[in-house]
Image (cartoon, rainbow, N blue to C red):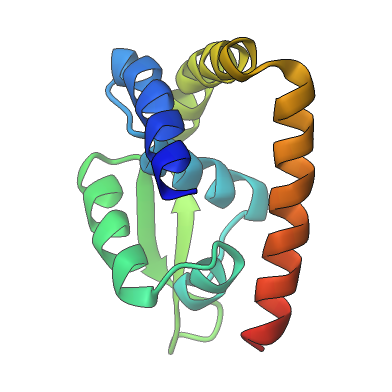
Length: 132
């Protein structure tokens, strides 16, 4: 599984690299876009990331100006939101994400891609249930 994940990530990184993004950066930007302003702890949980890993990635994306980390609703918490340039970066990355996805599907076959997605979802659900 690790080998497959590494190779698939290389395909996505190569394509997203054309617009100066990594797979992880694009994933994080799209998650913040989908969730709106969100507390880092909620984002880490939703993405199944260790908070320190998320913090490290947030630091990079706030430095680029694609994300903004500011005060939360109650003043005691923080909130992450997508900036205008972050939204543009998501839009710029989308066709490259689609291209990478199509290439991976072509390489492994649509039937295998569907079976793999279904199996991964089942495994994630099982593993997530044991981590609660």
